[in-house]
Image (cartoon, rainbow over all chains, first blue to last red; front, top):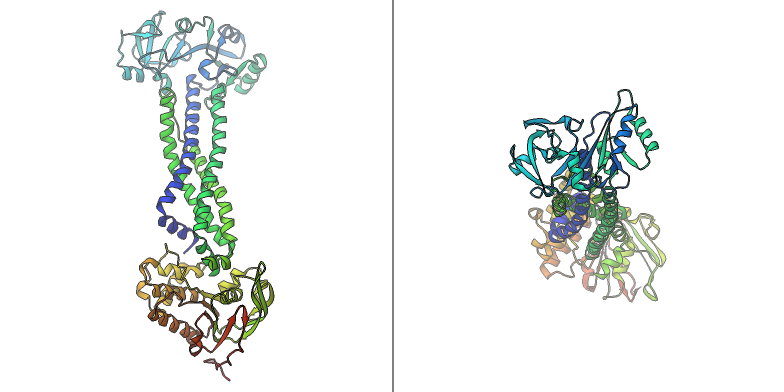
Length: 369
Length: 232
């Protein structure tokens, strides 16, 4: 009968309480997992708004609330093209909620034949040429049943679908491309773009180009890696900060919850611990028993929390209307952190009850019974 | 392994202003079966707890095999190696089977799983409960539970068994079984056994009696009878 098997036996003996305690921990961990999953999904998605290939950078307005609210002057593209180390630069306008029938789809305003639009493989039709033409991604076309020649209403403008493309980036295949000037007219930001994709010349290293850009244009955020894209958005930072706050709160609330349950358990079972002490269990052995029980409850809670968090993340992005362009990701790292937090909650919550159990006076406790 | 000797010298125990034991002194030889009698509140349980290192005397010294149990730095280790307790209430853990309850002292000593199980089954056979090993305490009668508690007390092969009113909560038939068991422990293992009881008529079953009233040994000790298996 080891501490572990005795813990399992003890938990099986009080299944209701064990489950409720685990559920309390699970809610805290679920919140963390949901936020981490949305945050991870948002990072990945933001990176894919501007697909960054080798030797490419994305420029955003510094301190924009999120990547889609960045505003940069189009004239910057001309300035950039003059730099010897810039092979090409292309402006993009990102539009959210512009298609009433597909509110989550992102519309990209771009010049035809730029290096972003140049990646399109047309399954039918061609690239747009006129201001009232558009091309639609394969996924969006399937979802909406769009076909060539159809007219779609984009922010009260009627545009003809002249091509169905495939790029291989989920966010772009779930969206559509329209001419840059049309997108600027829709947003009312003539002469402005959301972001600028820059391809550096052969021989120029990205970190060096990034340093040059930051020195020359201090108001820019430069992204060289899709995973860094969240940096471009203050909302992303907000999510990360919020997650940190929730982690601390979950540790406190979960820890206090586990502590409360374990203290109740220690008080109820004090004769059991006194008896163990009487038959030769040392203080550390009794404490280990209580800590193991607390940790088992928290790990069970963490496992439940991952499931609750995953469901919660799906609900959250739907509630925020962001389901089409943010896919929550429960990665191994998210799962690992949830488990780690669960163990921490168990240890923190179990420490004081374990100390109490280890310091029970067997003589007094057994005499009182 | 022979039983342990117990020597108490001027032992007192106070709780706040209340003095429960007043300068108690006695000596118990290895292998003796001794009754500690007296009315409720006379200090029997306190004295047993002091002997068993569950508590420390306020003054005076108790030595078990020459070891001052009031100054032990790791009393649990001492209890694990030397003492077996039987309480008035069995204190079996309700979630564990009879066998698992008997294994508890061995688990503290990091005895391997197979060896623990074998020892527990052997002891349950010895107390006549070999066929009840897998039963939970709730599925056993009062007498059977107390016999499991006796088996648990013997699990670590103690040299001193301390039994505090072991039959206090049992009917006559079950009491008789537990008594015979405790007596046989001394006979078969040579263990020193001290039994606390308010029943002053125990004298006929034991080697001698110590009588406590209001925390004092009130009568001269009954002269020791020859201990079985010991010469002279």
